[in-house]
Image (cartoon, rainbow, N blue to C red; front, top):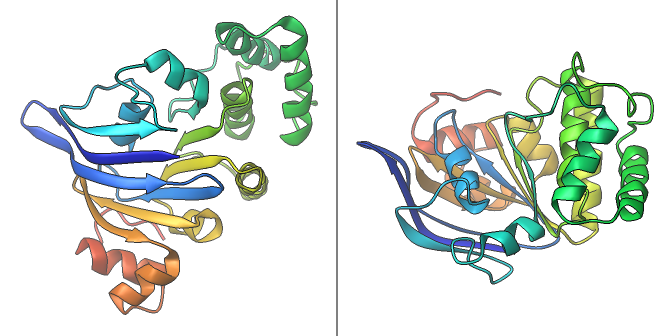
Length: 244
């Protein structure tokens, strides 16, 4: 479970994250929904210790990322927006390298890699160097790499960017699989269909602040609108950055 309270992050005079508080529970997919530049990525980066908050607090499974970042890295699986694959390594080697960084034994890495390759349908390209991979293939490798150490909590930043329809469907199925295993899954997105298809709870972020937080049904009731898209526009007070 993730808990944040009044997180704040500035870059000079720019306030990227302003008093953000939310809870993401195990066994649920929580979506951070907002326009580009709303503060979603900065919030995730604070959770996985890439950025240090100016103020506020956060806890992952009761552990403060600032006080024990190594413990947090063991508990988290992170799929960043950049993917960051090593193009000269094969898909298998990319995954194995992260397993080694987590201190896993060779046999455990091999076993877990076989499992992830089956779940993500990667066997066709697992032995190929990742240079020249499609966006879908790169995302799959990034997910397998993030989950090699079997983390309880998974953070994904814009996971479906650039994916075709079939790969997006496969990704949604896999994320539901993680949720059904009882994991805490948090993803940032600005795509309304992704939220509607995936998320048990939605945290709407606009201009670095929480505009609304609840289930899809709760947000519809609060806004008085018939669709999530209309609810989103009303709750943030603008249609800027909205992709239907």
